[in-house]
Image 1: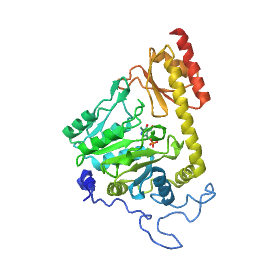
Image 2: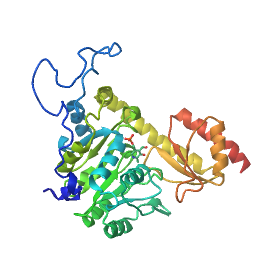
Image 3: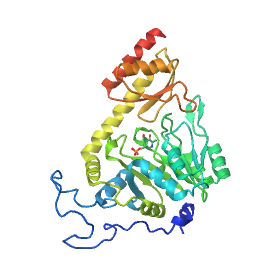
Image 4: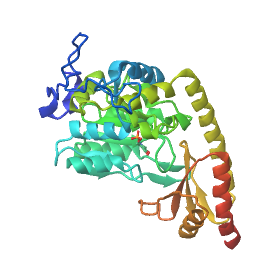
Length: 360
Ligand SMILES: Cc1ncc(COP(=O)(O)O)c(C=O)c1O
């Protein structure tokens, strides 16, 4: 057994999952095996939606594995990276027994999926220091070993705090947790970061898994295409735990078009623009008297602490600018997270905060 399969719930290791009509690779011309309609819906002009889709569409798999530089056998395509998070928790954690480590303040879905599975959630808070928020990798390793956690979720670049985790630290953590836990590095914002992907560690550290998505830099949030890049044997298990046809044909089509060469060139230009706008906004916000701190960010957002976050939030809303209120999150009692928009949107956001500046 691959060492990683020992992390999978015993009852799921040889679980066959649902055998759909699409699972068997049969040949023929008249397809009467899946109770589909013989005619397209009038709204389906090209007739592409009449049949169930391939569970993992071949051409999209090829495009995504080229994009992320991994083997197709290491790739699971799901309904956003949210689905991959949920599958990991369900396949690895026995309810009431196997814990998940998270690093608040952080993206909430790791804890939500754990909660739904009845998996204990171990929190190892990020540390706020001169360089910004940082994951305490030593504390994470100790907590994971003490709780016999099966999964450690690292978010890099981290939502909402913006910092990224160095690959050396991730590699060292994976070594400490070899045989006991999978280290999942969520790189939903990886395109905006200066750091290389943790997938470059996988050849030497099989217990590192990486989450990527087309929802952010690739501007396809509504298509719900996310991937998990991990050990091929683990991907095999997760595919058998996944819903039968998780990638709708219209979503696969737009994702494929969105990964064509011209689209990728445009995406690259937009990522560059977001990064330059991020630097501009960081400087402009940091210079405002009402602002206490702007955190450095490797993502497409900035975390900002205000003297009076309530007034800042209300002023933005009054100007029609909606940002993410982070005040309920641990350690973020006075913070808002502001997504980097177009230059015009960013200017509007800055001018909405200026009356506050005059009042401060
Ligand atoms: C860190 C992080 N991971 C994952 C996701 C989910 O992305 P997807 O749209 O691929 O489900 C988000 C969405 O905001 C996120 O911030």
